[in-house]
Image 1 (cartoon, rainbow, N blue to C red):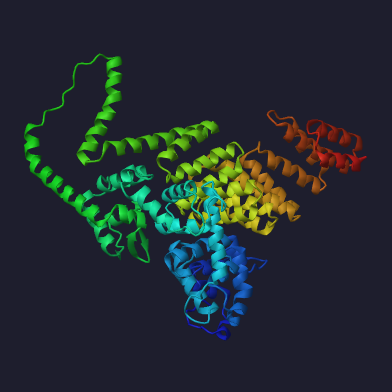
Image 2: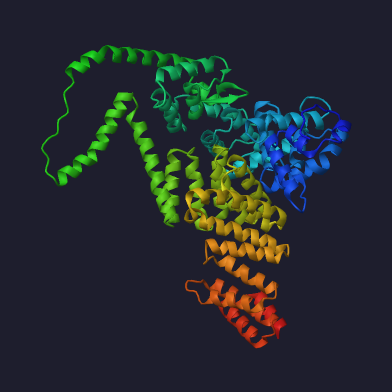
Length: 636
């Protein structure tokens, strides 16, 4: 059944089992198919193979359905849709991912599938399968120009909004000209956008951007609008902690003169981490025109000469220094204030010695120390609920280093604490633009979109987080909540089940206390989905499991009572609601909700007067509770 014989025509594919198709498409392994088939054989109610793989979290239900029911029909048609549309139909890429790839195609001229592979969204085997079966030739189909242009414009509008701008203040054609210089580097792009707005450049005056770049940024760049950013880049290149500056600069020279292959050397990796160079199709090049003109060949040669002379001088002085260097001795100190002062200054003395020894500039060290301190201080404020102070701290940090994506992410969570979800979305989206693999930034973005009731977009963000970190349960938990809002209950069950599996595995090693809160939430979401599907007994079991992990979890307590009432177990349901109302610490809204469901239960069990009294208590706590007013009228 899992033999590897080659069958490439649609007719030959007709009899091919689903497992072999998925394996050829690079979506599952041979062992995963074997395990799923063994599970299928053991079950009394034979599930489809695709269902089993989806429940195991190896495929999405959309992908399983596509390959089980539709792929062969599409393959026979050999229509000329862009390859990205096929990936979308198969549930392998979403609109935001396709838009980003199309945008980058315009910047790099790379093929769609190649960019999807480089981002880790599609495997090479998957790309090859789609090219073979869904296109009429072994080339990526050309993307419709107008469609591509629209995607590009939509992405540009998002970028403008992140910078607090719009098309009226900065036309998209001007932004495109800026992007030719910055290639999307966030700090430089933002600076040039602001400068273009201040100088009132309009459509038809795109060429003025080059004049602005040269006069305000490149020429005398130490005093220009990006002086701080470029100075930091220079210092990190010439006074690097990870590599010898001389070797790092030599490697940069090779890349500057011609694109070279990426061999994952320490120097090449560090240059990529610095943001000075980027890797494309296995080759390295300077990241953008601005860096190329500031850190030019003449600048490289000058600094290579200086570094070589410094190296020679250090080598000559080592022996002399070792003979004459004084020994450090402990002075006589009082055991009180002087001792504390000594401890306080010893750290700075060590830092000074360290920077002199490595040749690292003290201003750079002080700046990085300041950034790190601001981040830790602001994060502590965030965790203690001091959101306004935390935001002020992150803002100060980002004025120093606007590429610190972790600060953008945490700033978003602080804004969430203040229920400023539009600003939260902008902050977290900035983080994903700076670092597309920033998994918690995608999660933050998803939470913002969910709170703004933009659930389809929120789902895409959570799915992106899952692609980056498929073993992190919180993304599956958030995904299941969003699926509930979209009324996609089957998918919500699958997502919550995957979260539960991950958490139960962690429970076996880390203990129940470490995962109890998350497991209570995951079981609660699964119960809600089952309840919506009218699977009341399964929902009741899930609510009980949720409460096993957190007996005080209000949503699970309410859900359990509702389920018992659905099962016409009215005394047990009433007992649940009454038990909730005896608890301390409930908010008025929670009390109103408990009284409301108690009233419904009492009315359903023909205890009309008690039910009406319960509704009255609910309305007293929440005067605008229309559902309670309507239920009271029906009960009467």
